[in-house]
Amino acid sequence: MIIGRSLWVAGTNTWIVTGDTSECVIIDCPPDPQAILDLITAHHLIPKAIIATHGHLDHTGGIPSVSQHHPDAPVYRHPDDAHYLHNPMEMSGMLREALVATGLDLTEPELIVDLNEGDKVEGSGIQITALHTPGHTPGSICLLSTTQSDGHVLFTGDHLFKGSIGRTDLPGGSMERLLESMKEKILPLADDLRVFPGHGGTTTIGAERASNPFLANL
Figure (cartoon, rainbow, N blue to C red):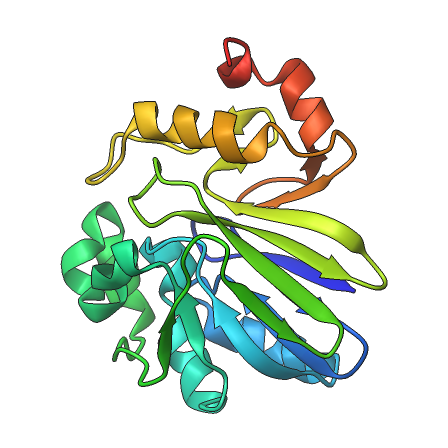
């Protein structure tokens, strides 16, 4: 089962993936941790891992609070985005004012694990494989997830959206790297693979290959 909710002022999607038991994996935590904790409680779930698709604060600002409530759940992120969790206020940019208004404790979680290309997060009927897809940030990753109930799906963070792609005008962004990783890692995937992005609605690889204007020349 995949549970999704669009949260905070940036409308960031948090995704909760469950397998054969009550254990779950949380993908991205916007700076609205109570809403995420309420979702977990409402579905009687136990987080076993928290994964950040990249380091931007609208995707990671809630991680410290959720981690404090579930300290046994490791926080996974690509090492190229490690600085975002280490010093979130310095890296928050234009989101700084909105982030300060939340009053969140942004202390770096104690249990952080590198998630590199090909690394897997597994357990209780869930297998998630990291694809390093730099461009939006140096450490952006997409997550190929497999569960018995949902089959194969792809969580794309801010790499690929329905009808669009992630912005590359922020520090560390690169349009050249984004399109290169899109061509090498994402577009070869199956047409019917469902895509769950970091903002907006779901789509499929085939739909984006056919109609996404940013992918027309790849």
